[in-house]
Image (cartoon, rainbow, N blue to C red; front, top):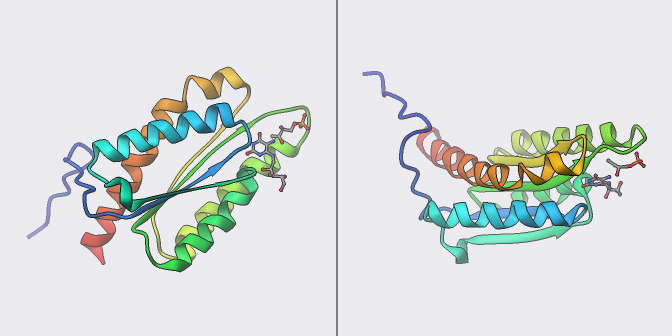
Length: 154
Ligand SMILES: Nc1c(NC[C@H](O)[C@H](O)[C@H](O)CO)[nH]c(=O)[nH]c1=O
Ligand SMILES: CC(=O)[C@@H](O)COP(=O)(O)O
């Protein structure tokens, strides 16, 4: 009998989950907004505050390594990456945006752990500012949904 996938509209119950957040401090005005929105949504989904770890790193390029360290602990059901990369005048934007994203994906696949990537990559600060709340909330929902899916499938 095919088990119907309830899809994203299903009620997500994160009450038994353990989640860790890695936040880049670069563009902290935005990443703090991402953090606050993410924490609020995790609470709304039932994730208990004592089951949420939060760590900061200097910038988006340092996020993958911190995620790897946390994944190796084997203590978390999902990880969340928060950051904000804003284009400047040089190629550095592409390097930071692309390498941080590729590193995050690699950690998730190599260490078999769901990682919600909410590292914003925008052309300017206004684009990031208007997206911080939605993207922070989305990251929380993705982390909870994928952690629950992993428990169902593995
Ligand atoms: N320009 C941005 C950076 N740059 C810093 C790098 O992430 C890294 O910390 C540095 O290259 C040392 O390894 N980081 C961001 O998160 N956002 C940016 O816009
Ligand atoms: C994304 C960045 O690294 C950015 O802050 C760098 O700005 P610039 O390219 O003008 O040095």
